[in-house]
Image (cartoon, rainbow, N blue to C red; front, side):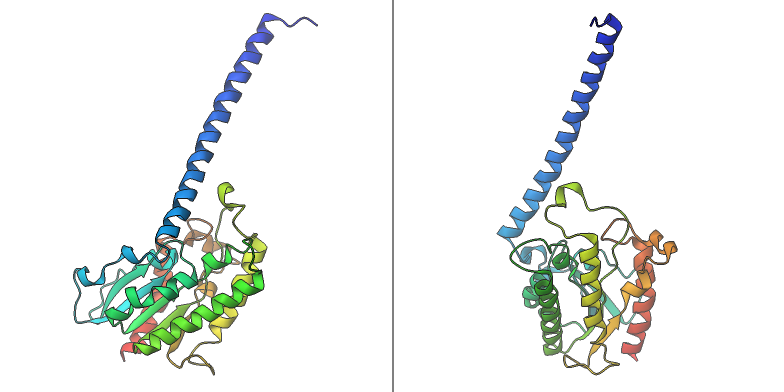
Length: 262
């Protein structure tokens, strides 16, 4: 078989494009994996993120009743932008934290601030790590429930009301390629989110609760539920909502805070 010169040229162009594309993909994957490795390495060095906040040097503290957003990245991105003359809003969220990490740093990041209200959002990072041995899905769901109960007890011990939000539903997008070996499937995550949320809803002070009578449930899952396709506008990726989503939650939060204030 004789290959014509033009075919050689096409083959050469094909191999050049293929090589450049492969190189670019590998570089991107390498950078992503490096970021993931550094994240877990830093987490091992400082697993609770204690150094992220220094409460004694926090500027602008006032005599207003303090409201602390506390938990994982969803709490960290939460801001209450509307002016309120009765409350001072402080953020103590940390990206990527599990409910155990949030529990263990309570004294360092929350207790000494003496908040009147704690807004708690936790557990999505526990549930996305379901494939990791030796814990089973059932074990991790139970850990979430236990940690939530202990955080509520800590809040009670410092005379704070706690507003616990149900876990947000999963948003739009796919699990990042570099994280798929570490993450659960969508179905397992959704199933586990529903189980933990069922427990959270049972804690409301409007119901009989064995944990506390100072717990208020803000049902973020119902507000953001993606069965209503219009609510996709509130999401920026699989796990996180955008500022429009937080505005929606803040409408409900404002109503709750008004009740607490009165």
